[in-house]
Image (tube, rainbow, N blue to C red; front, side):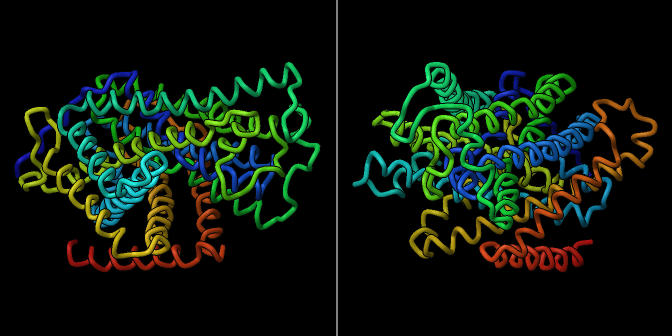
Length: 442
């Protein structure tokens, strides 16, 4: 059987660092954190710290796997190797489908955000323009993709740092806003939480999904110039990004304005900018979330192309690489499927599409748990015993088990939360279906 060609290694340390940051900072921070603050209050800082710790442990497990064999395309290849081809098949196609759904939802969001400035232009026009532009970037060169992600991530970083710096300045000079004095005691003067235990528990679920896609740096691992150096650096800096971009930003928001004054249905960034007198707040944040959505869409096209390439048999049509060593055929098919969202938006109501997106989110949770199981299996293998032991996960296998337990608890929260019970059940049905389908393959 013919062997697959190796993917291009054109991503620099600068690209990989920004890709990792971009994967850590999602639109959930800019749009969804208002609901998190509303439900959990300042206790959301503790929730993000705990959740961030387990996300970091997952990333360390992923990093150890990637560096144990840098010829592997993506982490699903390790699942296939250590848990079996059937599990690899199930997780691989689930991961591919999950990213396709995320791409569809982000493409829909792009069209919606553009209507803020151009309300008379149909959303489908913007959707096709953005999709065509990002598809072109993905098939030109890997470095072009990396450069695009670099600037997308930089915009998000600037927005967050602006909030933090603004909070520090206002705190030092004791500024007054329409909501009162900017002071550190705003963090505890109004209580440390909403007092509703179920809302606090549910906030763990929202915090976890804010990190969804953080593993993307691993998907790009096969295409870094120096994976032995770049991957450990990017993964180790995840914890610092969590402290700065999540803890720092949320703390700044709650210092500037008392947390009970934030409404769940609006971006806290818009509310805080508006509260300090910046009239263009909505436009600024709309631009930031537009770039965040475009970044996620860009990453989705990159990921689904590599995923399909990895799943394809070595001599098949989708295992082909172009002259730039890019899986263009796989990217083209994935992009074509994503383009169907233009028609789906006409055929299905918004609620139905959000339902599908939630299913993808729950599926990722299971994929992450199987990633940790794969790491446990690797640690018991001859590959680990006889290998160089690069970038080991601290406190393994106990940290593996604790991470699996934590993710299992999040899954149970999803299952018993009335708002997400249906989507979680659909996810379980999907896994039963794909398992039964795999029995005819293996």
